[in-house]
Image (cartoon, rainbow, N blue to C red; front, top):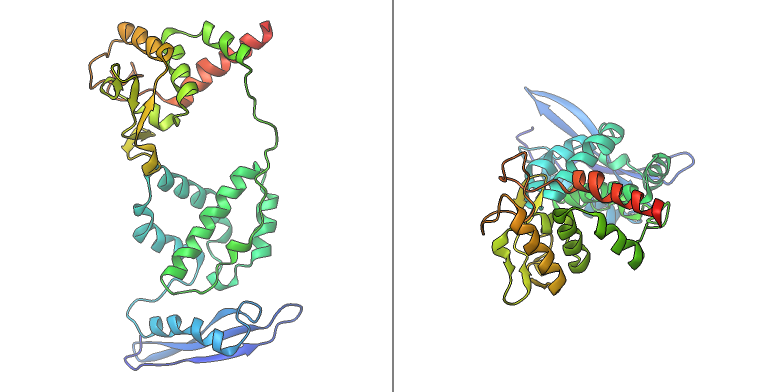
Length: 307
């Protein structure tokens, strides 16, 4: 960078068929050679007056006179976000963001300049993805978080993703069991699976929460279970929200099912998990995904053939 402070120049540039844009021009100086650069600050729709554009340029002007340049592309922003912000989030959120960024956002938008990403373009791209509406909404949310990070760093003043419209309407209705169907399902499950289904169905605990429970968390005197942690992909951490960390009432029938399972379990000490993985010698809990696929859904299909 140049050793001299530079203010650069702000110009309004006309565009055919679209709104005019504000362009900030400045130069890099390396090894005595100057290289002129330009960056689009925003459209006149986003920044109606030159005063608005000047405010947006303030952060850019500060950075071109600093030793470290601001990210220019979505890929560069992803790197900065991953190094400085992602680690602050819960483990499950970190994993979700990494997957969505790696699989969808970076391949499509990584090479794009931050200032050139447009709301309608992102909306059309999301519409074209062969995904459920809820999945598209998650991608949009993660993309928006990246721009929010840039705004927090004062590199940008406008988040184009915040105006993207997505639908959260389900492609099909939830498959909800009737009381009769639920009773029929529970009746054909193993002692372990029956205890798990009754616990989940009666308490409303998240999968990550009831999978992380140990026998020490079950209070047989007060008929409560203490939710203290969560487990996502064998990584233990805090519950998703602070409000989740509280005792949950247990119905006597659910407690009875749990204690019956404890009698049969190979791992019944207070420090052991309620639903341990036999394959991992009880050191980790069961995978809820494999359990759902192998036992619950199979039982539901078999039961419904008889109903």
